[in-house]
Length: 424
Image 1 (cartoon, one colour):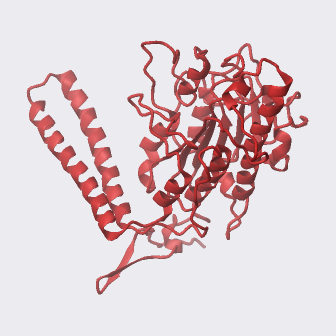
Image 2: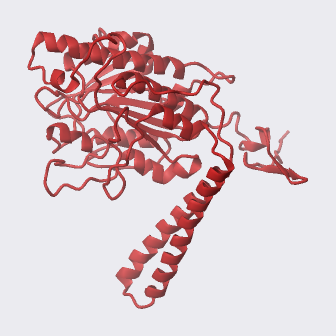
Image 3: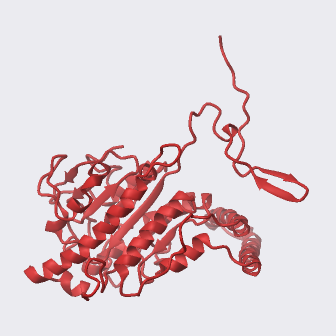
C-alpha cells in the first residue's frame, strides 16, 4: 500500500504571536524536509595560520600512509590521529616570497612581494559572500594580540582581526544595552538608505549607457541587492538576544601570553560554531613572548624561527610550537564531544592548520605544513605529495569549499578539485 506525506515544512524562524508577545518555536518535525530522517547539519570551516610556520622535522612524519610514526608535534595530538590528515609537498605556484607568502595563503595570488601586487579574495571571504547571511556573523577573524589577518576581501584588502579574546566573547555572547541595540539598528538602517540612494542614481544613469556598461550596472545591482539582503538580516540579528554559551565570561591574560590567548580563541571558535553564530573563522597566530609550559621565561619567536640549524634555538622554538599543538589538541578533544543527538561538531567542521612558509629559517615557501581535521573527510594518514610536482594548495581550498556544499570548480591557481588521497 502506498503512503503519502502531507507534512508542511516550517521555518525555524516561524513565530507564535499573541498579545504582543512573540515566541520562537522549538524544533519540530515539520521543520525538516518531509522525507528527511534527521536535520542536515551545517558545514563549517576554521583555518589556523602561523606566520612563522613550524619546524619541519618536528611537524612532518618520516613515513607516508596510515602507518606513519608520529612526529614530535603530532605525538602531542596522537589521540586524535584518526580525525586528522597531514599533507606534505603542497605550495602555491609563483609564491616564493618569504614572510609575504602568508598574504597568499588563503588566496593563491602570485608574487605577493611584487610592487604591483594586488591580492585577491581569500577563500573564507568568498564563502562568506555565499553563506554568510545564514548566520549572525558572516565570518569571524581573530589574531592573538594583533590586528593582522590573512583574510582578504574581493578588492584585495586585508580584513582586520580581533586581537582580544575578551572583546570577541563580548561581541558574541554579551547583549548590549537597549541604547546600544538601537544604535546598532540605526547604523544598519543608515547603510541601507545609502544603498537606496546610490541605486537610484545608478538607475537614472542606465538609460544613457551602452550595452557593455548596462551589463556592468546589472552586475552592480545584483551585488547591491545581495548586500541589502545581508543588511536586512543584520538588522534582524541586532534585535535578537545573543545565545548563552554556558561558560564563564572570558578575560584576557597579559598581551605577551599570545599562546594562551590563542587557546581562548580556539575555544571561542568552538562556541561560535556550537551556537551557529558563524560558520567561517580564521585565526592568525603571529608568535608569542610567553608560553604556558614555561611561564617564567621570555622568548623571541621570530629570532628562534631563524635558527640556522642552531640546536639551542631549535629546542626553544620547539617548546613554543609544542604548546601550540597542545592547545590544538584540547580544541580537537572538545570538538569531538558528542551532543545530545550523538553528533560530533568536528565531523561537520573542516579545520585546517598551516602556514604560508615551509621553512621560516630560510624563508622558503615550498612544502607547506598542512594538517586538516574533521569536516567529513577520511583521515588517519600522512599524504606525501611529490614536492617536485605537487598540486597547488588552492586545490585543497576548492575541495574544502565543495565539501561545504558549494559548486566551485576553480579558485586561485587550482588545477583540479581535490588533493589525491583526501576523500570524503
